[in-house]
Image (cartoon, rainbow, N blue to C red; front, side):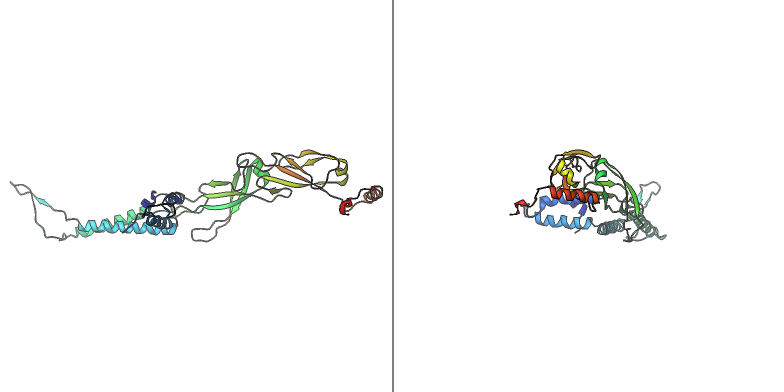
Length: 321
């Protein structure tokens, strides 16, 4: 017995892959054997699963619909062949019109019935060709890497990618300029209509789903979800005497006052200077002090350090015992 998979899932024959998936999930949540209590739910769950597995695959969906068309054509031809032949009525003078008897199942000498059957079959084939589903192009997903600064202020990025053709071959790289909205977050998606895979002849192209991902930054590192941090180098004399330092941010530099006696690892939190959050807020920026020394000290610096070592009584390892 033929099963109408579209009716089983409760969708139109023009339903998209996403609509078919959504319909299946709704039914599966209600009919899954672990949830439903009635006896027929398990069999119904198997039926909708078989329908979904057929309709979600483009090739299986085309084969299913072609089989349906062939079945409809066979039924229509059977009805045509089983229909009683048309009768001609003769109206003799002076009397009512009476049907002229003709041999049962006899065909007209001029082959009218044969020609009619041929015309019907040709019409049916043409209608089937017109109604044959023209598959739209596939929806493809690509990753667009953006900088932390682009996520904060927005802008446009040039995205290059290659998509497979319907026959599986690769095509030349395509370039699309993608608008990055202000406050974009990693994992956020944009749908570009008609920029995906090519459709069958006469069918629209698929869509392109662009997912944003952060590019590694030369200064900042991510901690948690939306907070960022960096090492803030500080000279030994700045740590001892105190200093006002400029901290780079994703926008303009921010000045912080470092009091005298600062140590490596001391951290300053700049509220709202981090990455965007989904609720249109911002994370924080953490600046971690790191005392650094000259890679190649000059003669004067060496003399000053030597004087300091002789004059200072400071012992950083005093507590070692």
